[in-house]
Length: 208
Image (cartoon, rainbow, N blue to C red; front, side, top):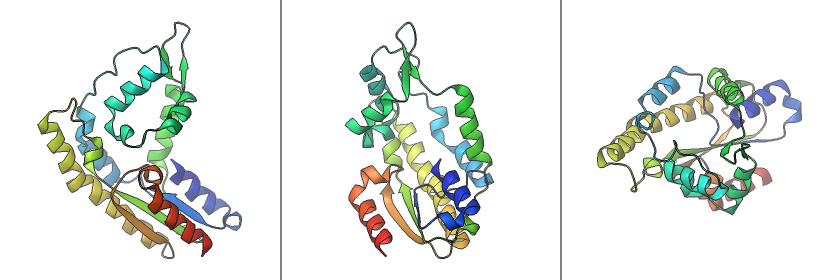
């Protein structure tokens, strides 16, 4: 979501921006290729277990999310526990639910998929970090069948990663002065899963 804020703010107020860092964020989700990539994602047709059950403790709820979404488990920590406590609430009968309303969630999604990046207006020094995602982060040995695992790995190799590469090329073309860093076998939460690499790249960029 930060891509909208970074790109739009820089276009509106270039004089207020000293430097920009996109952490696996410089993507155009308004493009036809994004819609195609999403429609082909086999995860859309795989129903994770435990999402149709009510939970009455925070820890049970978090455990269910990590089991249902293996990519969460990769980076989950005590810090994520703390953050997530601010993203949920209890109903009067004690059930744990997402604090964000469906209306707000839809508004965010609609913005993400309709906003056309204004990257060509970026004049500040820019660092673009891109995670070349690995399908293995989305696979559960606990509840997925082998066919589903194969479909997910093939999707990332043939559809998702080419889409990422397309965005890298577009970003480099629109922001020719940007420094690009690609993280092989990366994760969207690269600042946690590849903390040392991301920190060093950011430190070097900010000190230049």
